[in-house]
Amino acid sequence: MGTKRNEDQPRKARPLAMQGPDDPFAESREDSALSDCSLEESSVRELGYAFVDLIAEYLQGLEGRRVYGPMSPAGMDEIFAEDLPEEPTAAAELIQDCRTRVFPNTMAIGSRRYFGMMNPAPLPVAIFAEALAAAMNQNAASWRHAPAGTAIEKRVIRWLCNLFGLPENSFGTMTEGGSLANITGLKLAINRSLGRDFSHVDPGDPPGPEMAKLTFYVSSQGHYSFDKAVDLLGLGRSQLRKIPQDEIFRIDLEALETSLRSDIDAGLKPCCIIGIGGCTNTGSIDKLDRLAELSRRYGCWFHVDAAYGGAVMLSEMYGPMLRGIEEADSITVDPHKWFYMPFSAGGILVRDGDFLRKSFLVHPEYYMEKVLQDEEENATETNGHGRRVMTDSRGFHRGDKVNFFQYGIQGSRRMNALKLWLAFKKVGRRQYAAWIEKDIELARILAARMRRHPDYRILGPNTLGVCNFRWEPRDEAGRLRFDAERNDELNRRLQEVVEHQGDAWFSYTVLDGRVALRVNVENRCMEQSDIERLVEVICRASEEILAGS
Image (cartoon, rainbow, N blue to C red; front, side, top):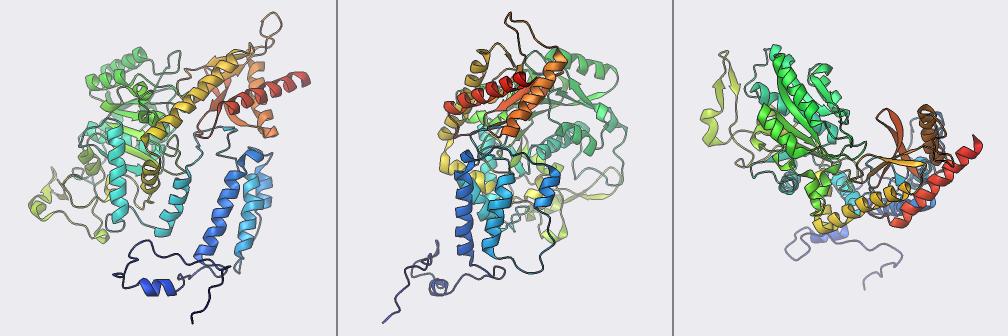
């Protein structure tokens, strides 16, 4: 007789693959426990169940806790002050540490009362995809080390290129975020302007004076990563032209063309025009079609930073707001924003995929890669200095392997495409579109509610999920009670009071030199009742401030 299984013990899960009679390892898999070299307290399955419960507990408790508690850096350091452990810590204690020390001192991202930066409530399938990627621990730098991961990333990139209307020879790469993608875009612009790539640059030659003549153009609302980019790429900060904005915080097209002509007259070389597809501050979208036309006329690379607003391409209703993005030479997209991915998941899409590859093509010996045999005759050529240099005419669409370390700045790369691939398959474009359309509608409802209050003035275009407004208290006659500087203080104070009370969280920013409040709606679970509640929280806090002043 067989031994009766204790019903209190967890049933062993059969492998998901090769479970039939043709699986030579089926019996040994079924009868042996999971190999556990490092976890002395629990099996992988037991620890996994505990952390799944902890994740569920965190997510379910978001609405019942403060969005952001009164904490200080010094206080945080005290809470986590401890020596490096000499001995293992019990799994139960680790779980309790997360519950008692981490959760209470964490911004409640995902709460329907969080209206802060572009930090979404992540999709559950993407949360668990992160764990799966960590378990497989693939280095998605090369095909050999991540065959499935490479194929998945190629497919996700193809989906995104098609979504943005790029041609069939377009390609791209996942990055850690929009900043790295923007730096990559400017590097491509330099290469195109100077006619260089990795195979045609003599490593012994300095960049030369031509580099100092290049100029780049972006709205004054452009992301700070462009300031970092010009510095990292060996350019002067003055080579990045900050073009004034119009009344709804888009790049001023007349001022841009004036700057282009002025630079040409001064003997400089316009290199790259940057369009913003939804800026962080206000959600404003530049006139991308007009920027595309100017880029062609002046021979500039056209880069679009759609890290935030790019997700509207999923919506047939709002996708036309990015008209002209299909003409971009490169596009920054950040799925860890409005695609509801957990950090990190950025990406860059490039109109000419071969040019992207040539710009970053290296051949480290230890990756054991080689060019195709029928191209060996052309594997090297002589450059203008008589030196032999490596070239590779193979395009990504012709090669048998894609090695993503040859398509960007990063070497070692996480399998970040997995979560987006699974999310697209689990959710589908239509559901994504519905969520984005609802977020935009909720931001517009907020603007409508604030307009009902004479003490609040709406700023910015209110086109995406960002709503900006300024608190300007008025007397019974409708006159401003305080000057502009005092109102700046009141707006900062309003944000601080709401933050301290923990009933909601939003940020403040500076628009046209004055402090304004900034609310961002980016939560697929949010409803109109959450917007109405936010308005009540804001009005109550403002009344308390005036009563105490």
